[in-house]
Image (cartoon, rainbow, N blue to C red; front, side, top):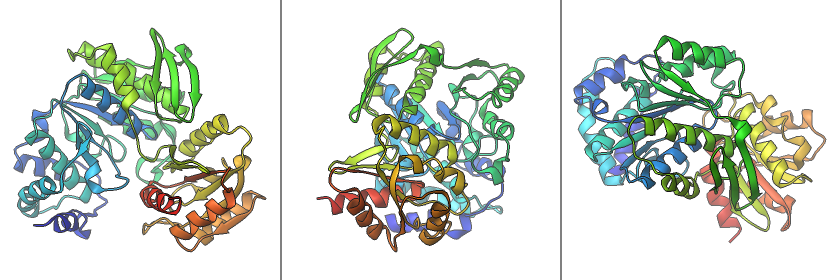
Amino acid sequence: MTYEEALSYIHSVIWRGKRLGLTRIQELLMRMGNPEKKLKFVHIAGTNGKGSTAAMTASVLQEAGYRTGLFISPFIHCFNERMQINGSPISDEELVEVTASIRPLAEAMEDKPTEFELITALAFAYFYRNHCDIVVLEVGLGGAMDSTNVIDTPEAAVITALGLDHTKELGGAIEEIARAKAGIIKKNSRVVFYGRNEAALPVIRKAVENSGSTLVMPDYDRLHVRSRDLTGQTFSYEDYENLRIALLGVYQLYNAAVVIETVRELRKGGWQIHDEALRTGLLHTRWTGRLERIGSHPDIFVDGSHNPQGVKATAESLKTYFPGGGITFLVGVLADKDAVNMIKELPSLASSFVTVTPPSMRGMTAEELAGLMQSITDRPVAAAESLEEGCRMALEAAGEDGVVCAIGSLYTVGDLTRIFRQQTV
């Protein structure tokens, strides 16, 4: 099996089931010898901020000297990014080896695994065979019925910011979303919740109480910004003074507070994480495609926000850095997203818009998105025929002293980053 054959097998249409449930992943893992039961986890669910929170947590654990696995969804540039150890993605060779070892077990099942279930099983096998001390495990969709939820009680269960997304699968009310995410709370869990959501909090509290778990939430009144520019942010939180992160979004400070509380919970469980590891881990965290600055003259940002809450948070951050607005937005969204409520956050910051079609079967066409944009703004809107044309149009509209922000879908981040870098060399 070659690398290309391994990816073709993983992405094969036979894995693209939509049925919810854990029976398939449980059967596959049992056939594999249940590697997940021999690992320790920090399990992270939520609507927004899962990836950033996972990346910061993994970085801190690595700085503390632990061999740390990180499982994320989706990838930005390369499939291998989905499973990493100490910041390095799985190699092509090992991905082939693990896939080849699991394939006959999966094919022997009467009810075949879905694509994500197969990827989850691959990750568990990879982390186990490489003797990870702990794995930071990001939920794919929801929580209760997500294939990552086959694990036993984790070292910490973390629930990040909640909002309305994937409503077809999870429900159309915050309470339903919260109930799905709270499914990762198991008996006697240490639970960290982002908070800042009055509708969700009673649901989370009930799940914590029913499972005999404990709940902590950050005290954001004790979080203070000390400085902020396009190189990063310095802040204090409770007794920690002058912490720094390179991540730019204002919301990343709230995510960092969640990480700090998670570290405190891990310490209660016996994990040795000294303050210097916390500081250094936060400082060294890099996270692709979340208000990531990839160029200057003009300033170019790529952001994978793809629901109303995420776009709103990004817009608030951009207002902080560019209070005068004047931003050229390059926008592409999936057709099953709440596009109207996403894009309505942007016109007050915009000088113009360029729309593109994401490289996905679910992508809304640039022309259709342009029509929506024109119905809510008087700013110029132009539809591009390709991602390359969209980047050129956005750069021309912004000019050397302007600002470009590509936003709306994680499916475009990798390609747009590559294209922008090619066009601005």
